[in-house]
Length: 160
Image 1 (cartoon, helix red, strand yellow):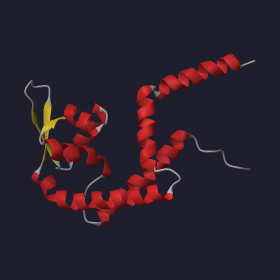
Image 2: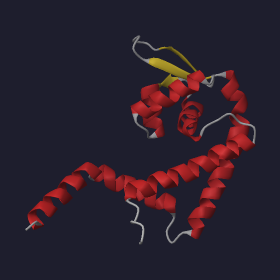
Image 3: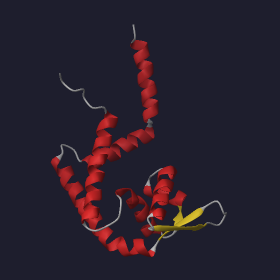
Image 4: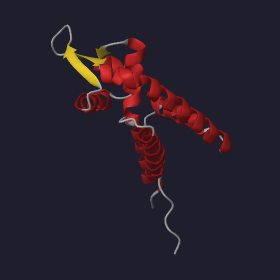
């Protein structure tokens, strides 16, 4: 019996697990206590300096919830510190001295990861990074939820 073809969600989760697992292993092998999910936050903070979680989410292109969860984990790891913002509700995020000290080694790992990603892109029929940018742009034009609703409507019209 032939196993079922994996769905888009299953394939994407497997891809992310494979990529993130290898990146995390590379950080660990180089002596870094660092997770791939920290990278968008660290890059935003190195580019902008101390900013709010809202600004981090916009700069990094991730949801506010994802930024907030990542920042919380980074606080527990001692990589970022929080201070009150101007209006009292906002919290300002800043890299700690521990994170600052890690930056040269983390930056070297980023370069290695980017070179490996370029090598992967070169092996594929179309660069994965380009396809992902295209997919995100298409989903920004029309959400996947809207696409599902349209498909469900079409299927119900075709039903006997």
